[in-house]
Length: 286
Ligand code: NAI
Image (cartoon, rainbow, N blue to C red):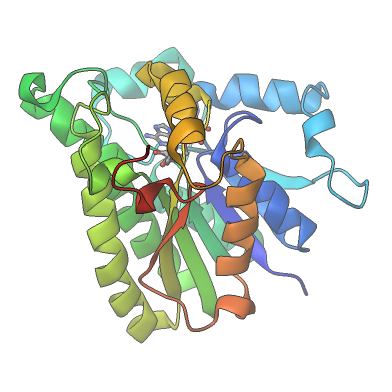
């Protein structure tokens, strides 16, 4: 049978998660997605009404089939962690079993196991603020939603991941180089994610024969990136300064993800793989 993938962080057809889902589907994988609870309704409605049909097209002409959409809020590990105001919030009360532990239990009940785990989500409420103006709460929320969410997902999914499987996340160069504008502790969150990639690769490799890598992606005008506010400038900067002066497509990240989780990459784990037209290699560009 084909491989089964769970992709956390898909809520429209613009982001990296969607592109990764498509590349995995094109390679024959069965696709399950985890969608942030507040975005669930509109995503499912749009899917059902055919709004994504054009972008569901795979190279062979068929449409990507999303076998199941799970509501997910990756900042909560189990129901005990959910504060009252969230529980009673209309958008959350309309769905159930969306904490990490419950989602994994649901996937286990529905399908038994998975082969591939993709983490394509991030959130930093103060991302537009410089680090010098970031509150403790904003910083910790960025880390919780963007870094620990991955630790938690892998921790819970690992027991139902088939040996030989693989996991990937998405990171950004602001973890290693100062990128003014990527604030609110998001740069710190990506640094944690990259460090965790190495430690988790060791632990999950030894414990479950699972490989763990992260893709450091170039700028993409996704919904999340537009919220940061400077994405058009970053795309332009990359175009002007990168070794490859071309638009960087989400599909290029999708294809790399498909390679990294496939047996073609069977000796690659704990790595940061750059998919950014080479921008990370530059010192100054003239
Ligand atoms: P996106 O908006 O398509 O994806 C982010 C997703 O995270 C959204 O679907 C959102 O609903 C979800 N999300 C937020 N908080 C959540 C939570 N608590 N629980 C579950 N889901 C939650 O945007 P994009 O840009 O494709 O982001 C995907 C990943 O790529 C992120 O890790 C991002 O940091 C990374 N990345 C993006 C770059 C860009 O320029 N767009 C560059 C490098 C990395």
